[in-house]
Image (cartoon, rainbow, N blue to C red; front, side, top):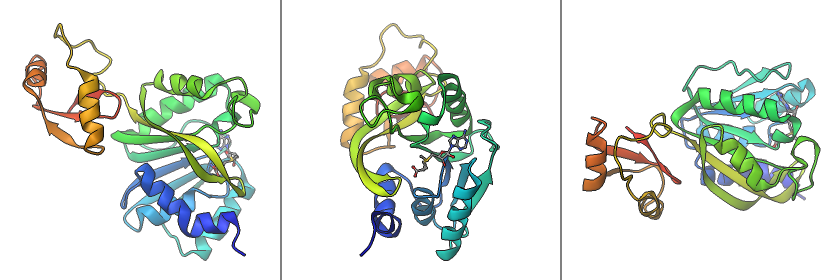
Length: 251
Ligand SMILES: C[S@@+](CC[C@H](N)C(=O)[O-])C[C@H]1O[C@@H](n2cnc3c(N)ncnc32)[C@H](O)[C@@H]1O
């Protein structure tokens, strides 16, 4: 009989990652990839035109990943063995998706801050950060997340210049078995977001967010008159990239 891991690797992992927003041709970083339960499905989704950078400090886990990748004929995985250093050897704004799955509990608060900073640096402006914060206070609490609620994790990541775009309960692989867990997807806060806009009244973000969500993610809309005026105040183009939780930045 097929095990949970086999079922995940052969089918469900791809379905899951596509639903999260991983697409063909993308560059993905799986930080703390372990034996590759997310790396392998990600490599299948991004295909030959894409690539998955699989980073871990555990040589044994990476050997297993290498073996599995070879057995599946996947040539688009670049395995990177580190010493546990949180500096990531990738260029600024070069990556589409970063996975921090079941790894945050290994890191102390200062280390998590460092990894969020690195993730922010390497993600493209419209890149996505996916987090599975297993082992927080309400999910088999352990180590550095033991005292943190899910909302605390969200706040912590948002304070590192991200917006939470999606939070949902999913069935996904954890170690060798299926589990139910909250997953979080974040977008980068745009560089203009942090600056106060030179208008007295900001547009109604919630209204725009609802409209944006109703029409699917990552669309660029022609802006309303109100937004146009707002944009002209900045002397920028007349379209906005509307992210799920807030208007992110002028593009
Ligand atoms: C529980 S496993 C999760 C593996 C995989 N992400 C998954 O969800 O199936 C956590 C992995 O993160 C790795 N890890 C923890 N801290 C790390 C660090 N600072 N640098 C690289 N890898 C790290 C561990 O070696 C381990 O393989």
